[in-house]
Image 1 (cartoon, rainbow, N blue to C red):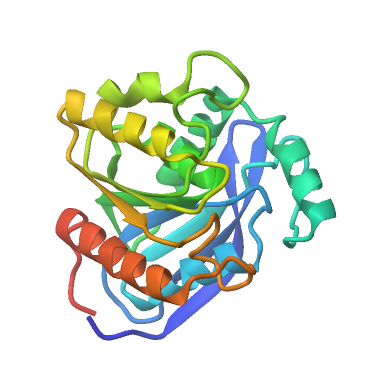
Image 2: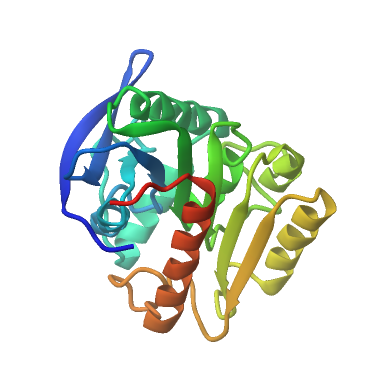
Amino acid sequence: MTNTGIRTNQVKVPNGDLQIDAYLAQPAKEGKFPAVIVIQEIFGVNIHIREVAERLASEGYVAIAPALFQRTAPGFEATYTPDDIQRGRAAKDQTKAEEILSDIQAAIAYLRTLPNVLGDAIGSIGFCFGGHVVYLAATLPDIKATASFYGGGIPNSTPGGGEPTITKTPEIKNPIYAFFGTEDKGIPLEQTELIEAELNKHRIPHTIFRYSGAEHGFFCNHRASYNAEAAADAWNHVLELFQKNLQLQPV
């Protein structure tokens, strides 16, 4: 796959009375393309998330990153300082699983209004908080492939409270890849093993990638924990996942 030129813009995704801010990146050339929903960390739709959307667009996908804090913290965008981490966690703690799923479903509906989107070829990718969210969103029939990066709390929590997200595993419809660092202090090995065991139990197509020496946030080149080798390998697997499952057309 050779990279293609892209175009980007800010858009509004309607969800009832709510207008969700979203960042849209897409191939600049004519054609119909698969789509990927990019789910933010606790830091909002910041430069890292926008760059992921742009990388996907350059590979021939229409990528959209909806702002999941729209209800309680519209326009929220943060960096990786300790103060911003606290702000991001406070915003994340106000989210609810049912509202998040509703917003993702609204993003799917929006993508299907775009003339250059293959409406039945939609995947998702998420990081940190977003890694948890895409595991939850993998239960939506419209999501054909999921890439979950270091999603914390999947075995023991869910946004807004209630039964842990891992209990939704039997509802996952399509392949999921999950990426973890072995030195991630927030996600112990036991959690990744529980996730893998549950996916195996319910025969969900999946692959778990564990990167030796990698910390939380290893994919993000704006963080001190960035691990270039692990990030490059993980990206290759993301492209493999989407190419296999989203009917990618040549660009």
